[in-house]
Length: 70
Image 1 (tube, rainbow, N blue to C red):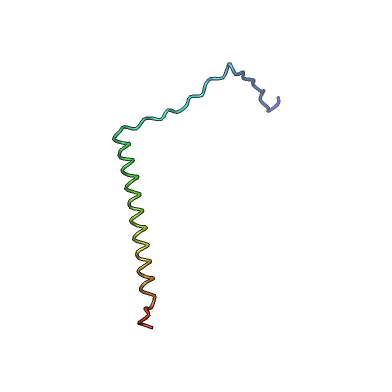
Image 2: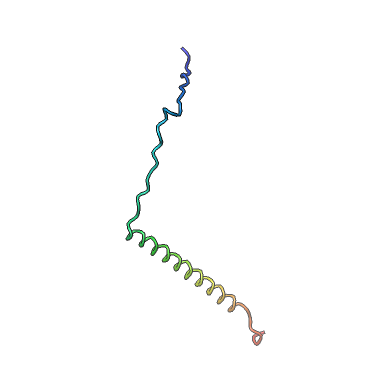
């Protein structure tokens, strides 16, 4: 006996429609929480960026000698 399995032909009319996963709608409260979380993350990132830029500017300014100090 051969180890190969016989080929099975399936006609379009015999195909079962594939079930698509339905997304569960978020409640208004959950949607609001996600929006608040997103905006909070944006604000935190902006504050961190500004803080880093300020720190870099201060270190740059303190390292540069003034004209009167030369």
